Image 1 (spheres, rainbow, N blue to C red):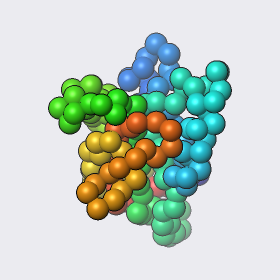
Image 2 (image 1 turned 135 degrees about the vertical axis):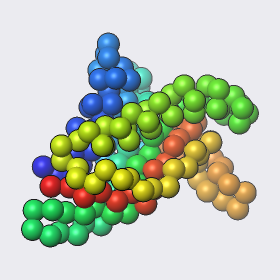
Image 3 (image 1 turned 90 degrees about the vertical axis):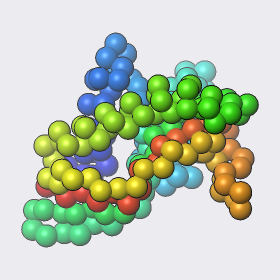
Image 4 (image 1 turned 120 degrees about the vertical axis):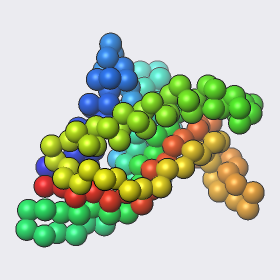
Length: 165
């Protein structure tokens, strides 16, 4: 099974708990960040898909693969958990409206489903977690401007390494 599909399977299991009635959220995309945000911009233009974007778990490509027989190590993984926010929100509002009720539960479920995956051997997932308020283009004073058309808050999972079959 391809690594992008293993993460897709993990996201599908997150959906079962996070959104048991619709089984749609969180959505899943993988690719280069520019490609993902271009796809989200296209969805914004579509009456059918403009509300089918967030919350989103995005697996950013590229990552490193080390192969040993049937066991592979995937390293340098970056995953973004994204949701819409209001550009007018203060940091407190963002924690109250997006981080605590939406992003943190998805993060917790995602990490639990990684542990439950039959394809992932490693169970100690050392990584860096970043609560990224007003996820946008980085500049000297932090984030500014939107990436894509949407005002977003995010949890970034970086420097994640997994051993898979």
